[in-house]
Amino acid sequence: MSTKQTFEEKILYKTHQHWIIPAINSFKLIFLIALPISVFTYFLVYSWLITSCVFLIISGIVIVYDHYLWEHSWLMVGNQKVTLSIRNWLWSQYAMNIRYRNIRDSAVSKNSVWWYFFKYGTLFIRSSANDGEFRASYVPKVGKIYALINALSRYSDDERAKFNTIEDLHDHHQRSEFGNQN
Image 1: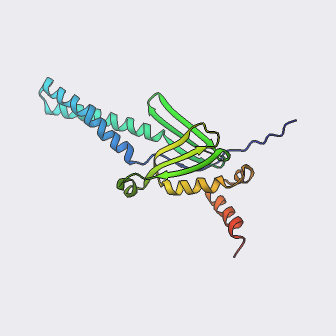
Image 2 (image 1 turned 135 degrees about the vertical axis):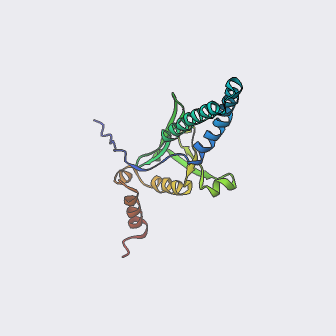
């Protein structure tokens, strides 16, 4: 008889891509879609009022669409695995997860001054199973998430199962690394 243990996944930290990403995407789509359609509308009806209304309606739709994609894309750090879910289009989604016991190494990249200024970066995690690389782009506070993942990957599945919050992890880390020094 097999005694395989199953652990309940608890979310310790969850975040979306940095807010600058949907803002930039919205501006690009407004420039590429709303502006040309508005110019075309002006030459059809020769009315600034109708042209302005068309521009505002299309811009509103673009902003709501980008917010929807952003809201449904996230990175979750749980007590058993790291999960990434990205909504690409309305009916297209990319999801990936990696268990801590399969993590071979991890890295963080901040490629420009803007990434440092707005405090976001890319998180890379390589699997020991060589089945690809886990990559999460435009992650806010990427350094803190990197430290959290490294801390969690030090522990066994049984130890991680006890963590319900980041505070539990911190308390456990303090006790195990530094002893009970009060």
